[in-house]
Length: 150
Image (cartoon, rainbow, N blue to C red; front, side, top):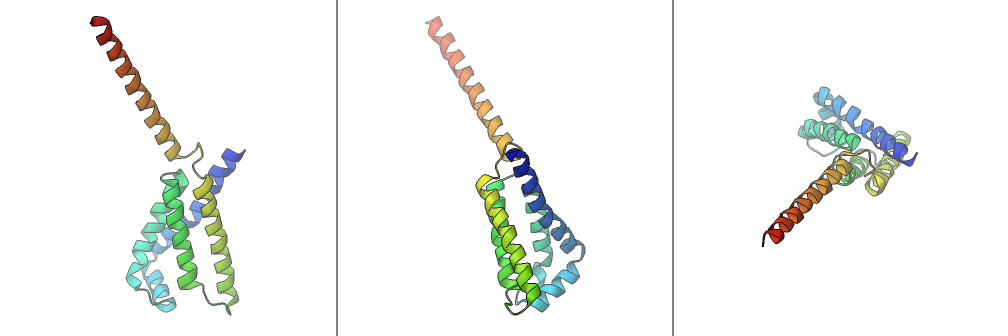
């Protein structure tokens, strides 16, 4: 059950970034206008931000470089609070900031426990270990043949 919860939770968090990133990429000018209105950041970051969200959202969903991906998205999520949702007097901004804090908490949990057996990282590590075992077995066989030939 924990395995299923880990994989499903990782995918649900990833969906937030994938959908948000696709929206930013599809509506770059609207995103650029929002960035320009809301912050001192350059509007030209709209497309790179959208691409970042899609790419790392997909990485998180499939469990590729899970720990690095979750930390990068954690920092990104805290950055959105700092740059966009920091107005304490605005109830909507506070609500969005709290939602982003919850997402950041989920990303920290993913960092800590996200490398479940349903991730690409675990599969890659298992394949790497199998290849190392095969190389070791071949080397022992060669050594045995060499020793018996002496």
